[in-house]
Length: 210
Image 1 (tube, rainbow, N blue to C red):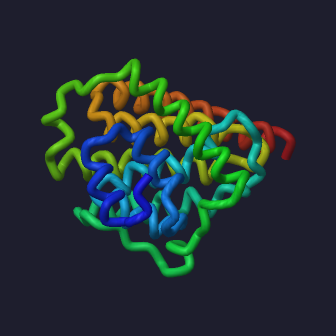
Image 2: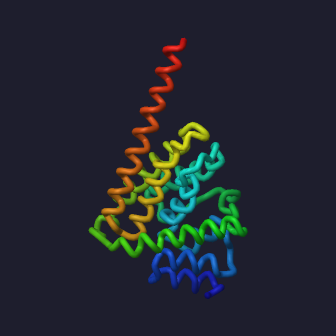
């Protein structure tokens, strides 16, 4: 595996996403959010959305531990909506370390999941992914899903579906498969609908008690 970041960046242009992430894990360079963004360049928005939202997308209560990731995702989504082609992050967030045994095991498990999706998916209606408007819509959908995950009550598990929608959406954009994107929108819509419905039920219940 190449240890030179420039060589690694060159290799990412032709490889599948799973191979790109595996190469990034194997090389000896920077293993931070900023380092990942420098390697993946124009793909870094979608790649970071996958990495940031994959933890809250797990069917496990996080107790608000992933709020920072959701805030970063919203900040990146706003930049995408504004038409930026390169990621800006505060220095402290760029230095967020993705290395370490636990994090690397998790990313490797994510790589295996992406590899399975790559076998099932294929490029569909790829021209839809080439316009600035589609990137703005992508950013808006990520912002909505990430905000919904952030607002979910702690330990409720209601952040799972909105976060999963963002992850699947980002993978659909990376794979340029419109069917995966449609599935992601449906997942997010269901998750947000459930969150709103339960929220209203709780508010109504409290109102009846008072």
